[in-house]
Length: 126
Image (cartoon, rainbow, N blue to C red; front, side):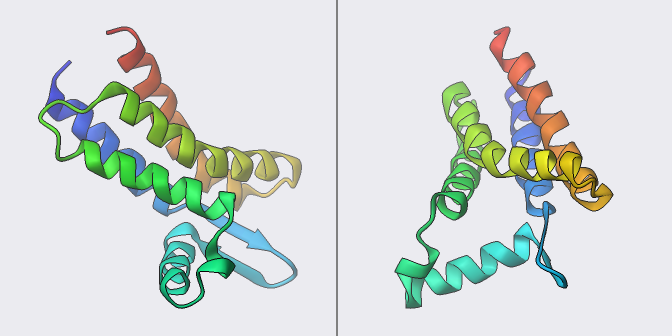
């Protein structure tokens, strides 16, 4: 519909991606926001330890979605690329939550996935 709505949806995608919940091992867990903060701090001190596709692609996806917020009319392909970058990790979180089953992982991934599907369907029609 409007560029303002597209920007709000892209902002919602970024915000919901930050609340993805990661859980591994016996007593280790964090939200994606915490993990990204650690990655960004390590990226400057020890880039080799932070360079992994599952860390860099979602971060790149968020950057692409943030770039669309400053465009007059958000670019459809930048939006799709941003969703794909973040969607790799959030899809994995959702998949593991289904296999687990872990309700924490499911609840953290579903808002992003629902908004992503809504945005793709909405933007693809235009």
